[in-house]
Amino acid sequence: MNEITPVRPRIMLENLLKNVEERTGYFGAYGGAFTPEILRTTLDELIVAFDDARRDPSFWEEFRAVMGSYSCRPTPVTHLKNLSDALGGPQIFLKREDLNQTGSHKINNVMGQGLLVARMGKKRVIAETGAGQHGVATATMAARLGLECTIYMGAVDVERQRPNVFWMERLGAKVVAVEDGSATLKDAINQCLRDWAFSMDDTHYVLGTACGPHPFPQIVAWFQQIIGQECREQMMAVTGRLPDRVYCCVGGGSNATGTFLGFLDDAEVELVGMEAGGEGLDTGRHAARLAGNGGTPGVAQGYKTYFLQDEEGQMRHTHSVAAGLDYIGVSPILACLRESGRVRFEAATDNEVLEGFQTLLQREGIIAALESAHAVAGVIREAPRMRRDQTVLATLSGRGDKDIFTIAEALDDPGWRRFLERKAGR
Ligand SMILES: *Cc1c(COP(=O)(O)O)cnc(C)c1O
Image (tube, rainbow, N blue to C red):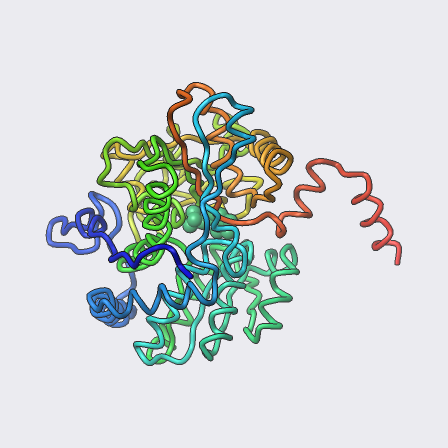
């Protein structure tokens, strides 16, 4: 059924992970674990359990088998012939993470950590979520693996993201609306950590992206590298060679890291990370930490990376039309790859993203998540300057059904407006 032959995880992640001045968990100068003493024991336990799991070849095979039967892996690579012709440049291919269970690449990491939890013998999982996509994926995994599940979410986000809250609760998760502070993601993170400090004996914290204290960036990247491995094999099978360039959108950085890991050692493959340019880098209303000069190195939320912060280290407000990219930090793995020059970072504005979204929709019949449309926008901007005999691969991290409200509003769709008015009238 799966035409992809089993591949062992490649070792590039290990090459990146260095001890810096005797401190473990660093990628170059970034990463580490800046956590309260109380979490030390459980993080150390997690390091041991994960090291044991990733050295056991049967664990990776179990992960692949679960993702094959539950989440459509390997996800296909689609040749975008119409878009390639329209742009008049290279042949463009799309890695279809939108076809996963729950509609994005998030399930790769969540199911992976779920299998790790089962291996550790823990019975409960907790997670925090902003837009709610990670919460839905975690609740899905918990239902499937028979784990108790609590999701922390800012009270403001609970109101804004009702459809996701609805599904989390139907899936059997307890959703806690956090009223502290600004009642958004960062407050949910604090509450979740507080829960973990008291519950860590039987509870695992399912972190949603390749950020946070060691070993989370390593764990998330390790599971997400399934994307890059498949991409590499599929591009070889379909085109007979590696792509010239690879584009991914970058929020916390998990789909990008996972995809890039498939090509890191292939110097001839150019890697491009697309961040949220929001209303423009010069407006200050964006979430570009690595592109331009917006972000600066700092320590927050348990790890060292580039943050959007002011001179005093106060976190700035971020903005993006795509909720999943709207975050102050970024994976320490990507901070390291930026500094080494291996990955180039660019930003796409909200307007470019909406245009890229519509182009993909109309020319190829694919409904992209607004996050993923950042990668598409990067391709549309740069592909016309590439040669026709070249190939480009972009990862489509998720599908856009969840963005129907945002997109209908942005396009000021008259039928949709009437639909909302009629509902409000009742
Ligand atoms: C959450 C999300 C992202 C951002 O997360 P990364 O860790 O940067 O991959 C991107 N795309 C979609 C569809 C998402 O749901």
